[in-house]
Length: 367
Image (cartoon, rainbow, N blue to C red; front, side):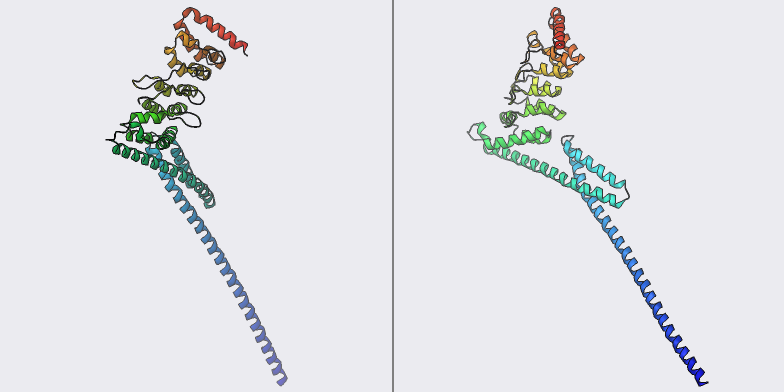
């Protein structure tokens, strides 16, 4: 009996010990599961925070880009096409913002934003340059107004009202404004000096140190609508001479003809009371406007020049000894040839056909 009791007691103790071990094992398993759940929650939270940071970065970048693009858009659209580069940047920015709207992938959005932020730096530099130029122009305008006011009753010659240093600085700003077609900036200078047309004429005729080009040359070179308007305005100033050469012995007319800008050429050839128009038949460096237009097949310019032709000007040869008709035939422009044929027939009906055949033979022999 006692022996059976001891056996039973030992069995109970063993069972209790095993139960405690199992409980401890269960507790350890529960703890491991809890740790795993906690790690998963932390990881999920971290991913959420990372995604939120990504969204925040994208939205902040998008806002910065949009602000600059709005500024570009406002300036570009309010200047009637004067600031083309500004408008092009605005269009580029709008395309970038549209691409952000077209994707739902935030990683892709971030890549687009980073591209936009890189461009944003360029756009800000562009706006800063424009602001500085406009500020400097306004300062010069203010200085000129003050100079005119202070010297109103002064006995000094009018030419002394603008020092050579101020003249050079102002001329360089004018060159920059004309090259970029910034009519508004040029208008500010003109407004400040409206009572001093001779000073404006000096600014128009100021020759660039590198090329020798004046403002009329630059109008002929770029030839947009703004440049035609500026050329027309400049030719009104007393003392402006459209026959002045640059360092290549080209007049503004030569430049306009070579670049095929007939609208500018028309104003450069127009006679005004106190300015000097260009001579389109001046051979300059060896070619005149008729040669250049014939060689380039620039029919509109040839049509403008045809009524001005005489027998002598039609027969002027280039420095290498060829005629305008020869150059037109060589260019392959049938229309250019017809315009010159018609002009030749008007001037000398009997001789025109013989010259036409002779030039055709000469062109063929050069093949």
